[in-house]
Length: 228
Image (cartoon, rainbow, N blue to C red):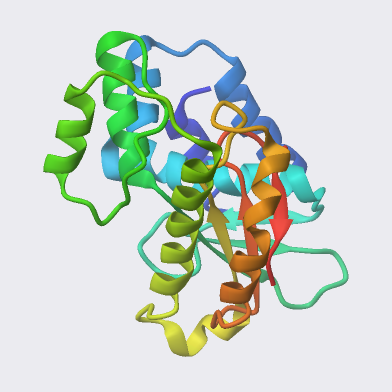
């Protein structure tokens, strides 16, 4: 299923089970090399970027938590990004989605698209200039320690939580929940290792303006933790 078809069906209420099937139909169906490359980069503000930045994290979230009910997406720049409606609950849950270490993932995707391989970890932040990324990519790949990967992950997630605390719609955020997609996947470290960073993240989440804060991995629904 094409991304455009998925997006066209999620702006109205859709059962969570049907939403899961839509996303899986896309990933399990035939995709052209160009579609795969564009997905990795989140190319196209209203298509692949929306799908990668909002639809996929929400998909991992509902699969990981076993949520039932229905879901819909705004697919706009307004807050929140999606709503989840449960049977017997009068008010839908508003979920704002954000991703950590996006710049690193984009640069890694560029290398993967161009050369058929990516190094997976650069150790830079979303605030670092492009020149630092370009310099890192020019160098030969080098190893990285467990601690360095965890520290980069913590910094990226904390940045997301802190930046959302100064959102322009802050006066309304106490009614919503924040879903953070961390740069967490098993190719970097075994998923159990990421639990080491949870105390620091929960301390930060305790001061979040959102009612609840959730953390999900970036490659599957296998890693989910509630931070607040």
